[in-house]
Length: 164
Ligand SMILES: [Zn+2]
Figure 1 (cartoon, rainbow, N blue to C red):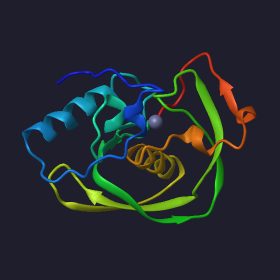
Figure 2: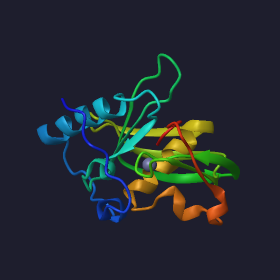
Figure 3: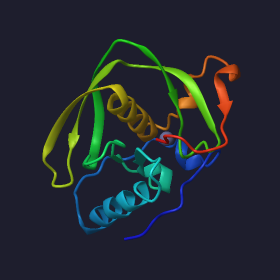
């Protein structure tokens, strides 16, 4: 396993639409292991999508910061339903040094597959809903800064806070 370097804006790989994962072979399993290690390399990291480590595949890992939380491995994930709207503060590993104020859904439903290829459905609100929307956006070449109403809603930060 290896901690992989994070791609940051304006790296074009962050803007590519990713390809679906067709079979969970050895190379995908290794990629998942490396992404999990990269996610846990820094305690502020909550989620990581494959384009952030330079791979254009529909694959993301999420782990909420609470103690005892397990990694969520999401293969071919997509949002099937969104409900409500709320204002959130968001940061991204690929946009270092900033956080922004944007609107996200109150809750989402997501479907995809786990690392064994088994179909999973996730109902989420709060930070998990935000993380799922953020990581699935990455798979579509979208960054949270695309949702900023104006540059006044983007703030410079000294310390890295929660990063997705
Ligand atoms: Zn991000």
